[in-house]
Length: 419
Ligand SMILES: Cc1cc2nc3c(=O)[nH]c(=O)nc-3n(C[C@H](O)[C@H](O)[C@H](O)COP(=O)(O)OP(=O)(O)OC[C@H]3O[C@@H](n4cnc5c(N)ncnc54)[C@H](O)[C@@H]3O)c2cc1C
Image 1 (cartoon, helix red, strand yellow):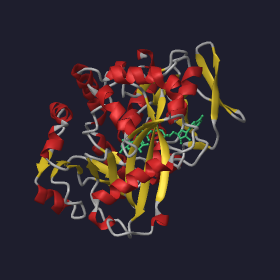
Image 2: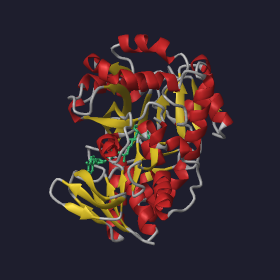
Image 3: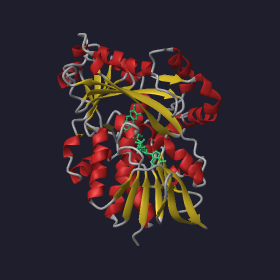
Image 4: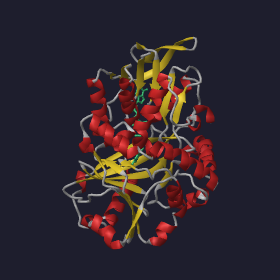
């Protein structure tokens, strides 16, 4: 039976969910305070990678030994605002525990693989469906290393990828520099994941998905959801700052802000912001044409429509703390060391800097499933580092939950009650 479903949040997860619910014939209302896919959303500023290889969690065995060195390095990929350490401690302990053994990492990689293995194809199909096939490219994804020893240092990650069916091919120095002639000669070893894809305008893509959903009959309301109205265990309405929207079901897809809404729905989820940054160097200046992840920079580089986007960094703070733009400048400095065409000084006033929030659980897995308080509220958040890639599959899983269809994927690992 069709329902009236309110989707809370118009990032990639909410947008892709809207399309799947409309496909099932539901009446859909999307509630979003900002522009769909706007700068407030993680979905706007990410690296745009759609990689079946992104199955390796951030927490790996021995990480706790490396963290002090990483944090002592002011140009390193990880930073923490120390005055938050007591509040963050429980999340951090769970995070380290989640990757404490190879067996745990193997399990996480296997689960993430169920969400990521066909992510590029799913995006390709979705982009065609909304008539924006131009936004998803399938040129492959390159992981570049200074040398083979640097690649070998990540042997566990690459063996887990192989084990989970991720196909990759080694590139000789000549092949690597033929694929991306602007890449600095310092990189002499590469790997290409040929099945991978990338999105050349993540924010525009999300906006286009939402516009398509509206064209198919979805309602878009510019408001912030503040709570839920229930009669017994039946959801009757979603409250916003100004009114109540009568509905049968609600989907919480509010990115980092999902935590408070999940609390209202009966679940305490350890969701924290792994803040990330990007810089976009105008395409008149940066000529790179391939998505590249330099192993020594821990960042995802993407030739977007606006220019070369360099995205990365993990900064543990709150979602309300002011950005630390020095983190974005680290990315810019690294970009200058990565591409030979950026060695010549250029007009840096044209660089766009952005900071946003990866909605991250400590075990690196999203929260997808029904709430404890009522089966009428469905969770779709906590996708951390892989939310763009896994948005479409999440939309399908949510649609199955709302239709009462059996899920093609075991959802136990994504349940909010695992914490
Ligand atoms: C630097 C960086 C690089 C990344 N690179 C990649 C990558 O290459 N590939 C990849 O797959 N992922 C990547 N990610 C992760 C990815 O961007 C996120 O996981 C994903 O965008 C999360 O999508 P979302 O829809 O859950 O949340 P968001 O995109 O944050 O959207 C949530 C929306 O909910 C709205 N909202 C909040 N509160 C409310 C409320 N109370 N009522 C109504 N609406 C509300 C917000 O305004 C927002 O628009 C990266 C992230 C960062 C920060």
